[in-house]
Image (cartoon, protein in one colour):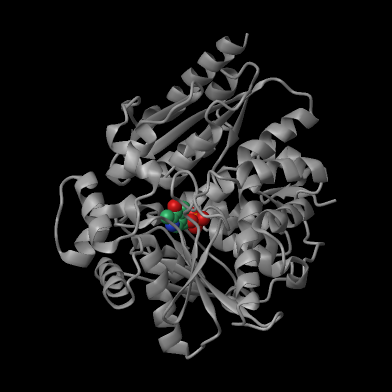
Length: 497
Ligand SMILES: *Cc1c(COP(=O)(O)O)cnc(C)c1O
């Protein structure tokens, strides 16, 4: 059985379903597979539907769920909520491929994981015969929030609270969240940035004030720190690889490179896990925006927060503390929890840590880091539209730009797949401006204009936003976060009792 252990204390070990319930470990660490015993050869999934491939991979790693449980979760998640029958289509561009991860209910790649996580969580609860409330606390830089709100709305025995930075998310993202439906949801703006939101949520699980307020309520998380989110993200690396085999681009077993627009390091870590369990991945190219902390880290081995936080047009990647990197370092260190704890303490106390050369070499043997400026991002959006008739969002553009530079610099023409992480319509003002130079104040005008010039249809969930009623307007100071969470827990406890 795969055991999940905390990156900061490996004695803290849980089974898969227990780790899904827990989310973050009490010591602040992240539950990570103790060892990767399973292998899944690409041959095994070549002819599978997305759902069949998902069932195989998720069951192999979350192995204390039964086959029936996993199948029910997968079928409930990947259905007509997605506006593409194949769930994750692959589209050719010059120099590579775009893996379109944004056909789900909120038009963001996070839907892939957040349509299934609530189902995995409910199934875990059934296994334990529990009927207390799981309170999902989620920090979002924009996309996770809406995807989580949509996934958890009115799911029995759950409540969800989303914190987002007041300045930083796009107007469409804000409206998506503020209009969320469901009796069990709450959305709160924070006067701070994403890292402030993430810190609040991480501190809540060990805060005495918060825990004292939890009576019959268990706190969990829908951030990519939950293993139940990470594992479903491995699936699309496999399914898109199979597509390249089936369309004759690669021979089964030959390597493919993946380019991943990266923020919290969850998506790209799922790619690394795919490689560990047997998918022939050559390079993983970590694409960042101007918040290029990961590019510097991959090049130098020093992770340093001594830099300005920059607000960009790819807000889901405006992150300086990439939480999931901790899992990679833990696994590469041979599960050295003491060393990882020390590094994370350094990060907190001094704002930086350094890894040794052995670990750096291991990282550099797989990962390459590139970052893209705002100008280059806009130019990439422009060029893809004008030259290739392909409309992409700013996050995807950061990926495409990284791919182009990687290929130019290294000459490595291994087939490359760029993860396309959001619908261009989620960021329509910036996309329109990049293409035509036209500045619109109103998102919906920009949306219409973009539809007109591209002929690509606006996803239904975004088109209907315009006329939806705003339900949530609360905004708090970041210092008040833990208190606000404690109050919310009290409310849930009273409702329960
Ligand atoms: C979340 C997100 C990312 C970054 O993914 P991580 O798993 O945090 O690295 C990239 N693009 C978009 C559109 C996202 O929503």
